Amino acid sequence: MSIRRTALLLAAVPLSMLVRPVSAQQGAPVMVVPRESQHARASQTIGLTDLSVDYSRPAVKGRKIWGALVPFDSVWRAGANENTVLAVSSPFTIGGIRLPAGRYGVHTIPTATKWTFILSREANNWGSFSYDPAADAARFSVTPQTADHVEHLRYTFEDPADSSVVLTLRWEKLAVAVPITVSTNQVVLDSLTHQLAGLQQFWPTGWLEAARWAIAHNTGLDRASQWADRALAIAPTFAALRTKAVILDRQGNKVAADSLRARALAIATEPEVNALGYQYLGERRVDEAIALFRQNVRDYPRSWNVYDSLGEALAIKGNKREALAMYQKALDLAPPGQHGRIRSAMAALR
Figure 1 (tube, rainbow, N blue to C red):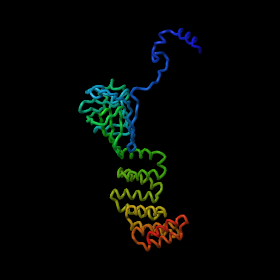
Figure 2: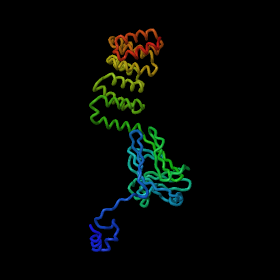
Figure 3: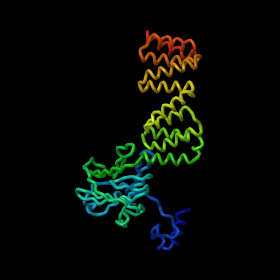
Figure 4: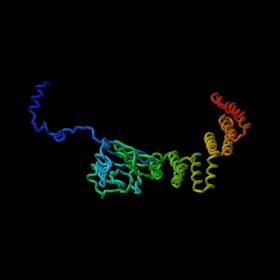
């Protein structure tokens, strides 16, 4: 289009339309430009609990922040633009207050010495301009600490552990740390229960995995016992019997536990006995490991692997002569790919 034609078209447009703001023009799209305080998000997972902070990052820009740009004794959005939002996917404790999972608007009341930290059930405010104390879910005091200079306000999740993390606000030369705790064991137990209501319930592996998690974390043993029973009802395998035995041991029923271990050993395969033997070696139960490996030798005399494992256990025990004899039997039966390793083990005993 020529310059002259463009000029004629502009001349035909009413002046009011030329000077009217784009956002005010009916039906006109709003132009997207960068915000002065950039959007950011920090996140952390603790166990199965997801935590996040959604906020905007104002900059210092050489200004006096505390008691000036951010007034003392006034509610502040703890960021810029929309209010800062803390989202937690499981029930949690903050400032000694137990709260349900959800999204919470974050507000603070800074002073020169102490801050009031506030979580509001209203998480969709613009800043703190419509903040209402009646919507408070939690309100508690925190003590800010002097810290290295941070130009743009920043939230971080620090010192994550199995059931806790510290949410820290840093800006200018100040840091405000707020510990958060989660009942991870309960969250996981509830999650496993929910999962086992689905397709997992039709296979023993899900029930066993859930029971083993509870055993490993020494929690929910009554529930773990029921899960082990479900696995046994589907398939009374070596793994299921031994899992139930561990639970019975933890519950103080050693007689029943020993009975189940005996049943498990009676149906164990060569690899299962071998794996249990190495478990015992790892636990420094060398004599019990040797007894298991001897059983495998009796039950599977044509397997090179049973002699190899027994030789290793005897070497750990210090019985070099019998260890060499077992390694020689393993060497006689083993595939060529194993010969070099077995010969090296034998050489180390001579």
